[in-house]
Length: 539
Image 1: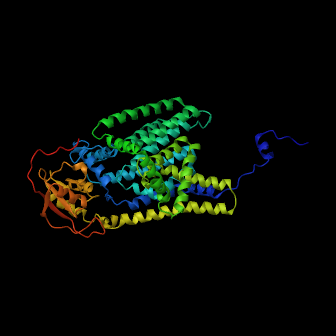
Image 2: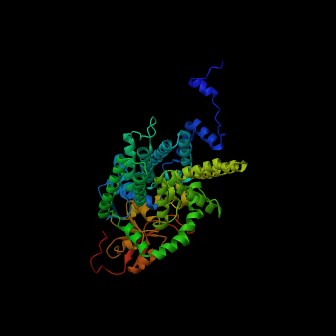
Image 3: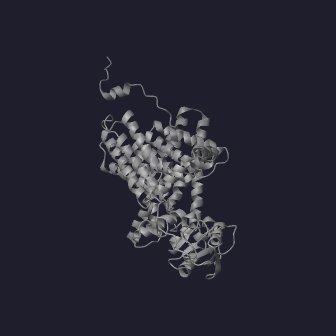
């Protein structure tokens, strides 16, 4: 007589074996990434250290942030050229000010080290986000994918607000995921107890992002809509909703405070209102210029690190956009954040790959999710070939561009190769201004170098723009740094004034590769005496 199986082991033995789905290429990749996670993260660290050379990649925007930070550190307030500044957002300049105070120096090496550490911190948050959402293999693979992205890699070495803003965004997304979606492992129907550091990520990350860039309004709108979604559709968690509501109110208070300060948002409001007042022009610009540029080649360049070619850029851009918007069905906040970023790029600024850095981890995740969906949804050899080709396309193009960046960073002397040698003579020009120009004097310089020379030389170096209409040759000591551009020449003629003989020796070098004229410093001599009080700088 057969004895019935009553224990669990017997039931398991007699049960029909479950039909398991064959392992796919993506499964193998995830398993490989998890087994080799220490090696992969070690490769990332080495890859980043290879490009670190301690050299400032000279840019006008970063020079502005550095100068503002130095002035704050020196007790001069949020000023530029002795004038209260109203354009740059306060976060990054004040961060630089803290670094300058800590090291008692305005050298750029400490901020460069800080920016690299911010990059590593952002990668750690990327790992944390996808570990919370998916699993460790997925977190490892996606973090490595973001780390080898040429867009992400580059801005770890730029003294700009892009990477600190992304740090705040990722911290906020990690906190949002933990407090709204994390469940108790023992009771999946219950929310897990939120750790104190998750609240720190949620609140701290949000406020880091808010003070870094004016596009924080896009994040605020995306967060508000995600909160409304959670209140209506779920997950219904009262405490996080209350906390996030308080955060939105605090942002409004911050807006009122910053708007009334010297570094107010007035210029951003004026620019945005001007665009809205000329709505037909804005719509025409969007459809005739911005949308074509978005697909040829901005989106493809942001994700793949390079242009893929006419037509291919558009196909890749459409796929990226569709996959990015599809994140709404995975996490509403993620899809809303991608959508708001696209909206801001098309209406308030213009399509450049750097403006998609703030959603790059989500774009990498969306691309991987799309490849996994295709592999699971269809069958056949062509699916495997397509999967491998698209996966290697993103990895290979980015790694090649990262390699180019490393080579550029390691070349010596660095400034002779950076941007085709446009700044090769900047140190000599800086010394000339320090020795030949009085501290209270003004220097009119060619475009793109004025802010850089202001930081390096501690002199008032400006471009001949309407912003400085009050600088007059018969009241101020003014110099011109040749070669002259048309606006500078027109400014001299309008004074009226003329240029004196060269001050010091000409310095070989050029900013424009097509212009071989040397740098020459000349004093501006007024043709008419002063006839009244000088204008005051606009406050």
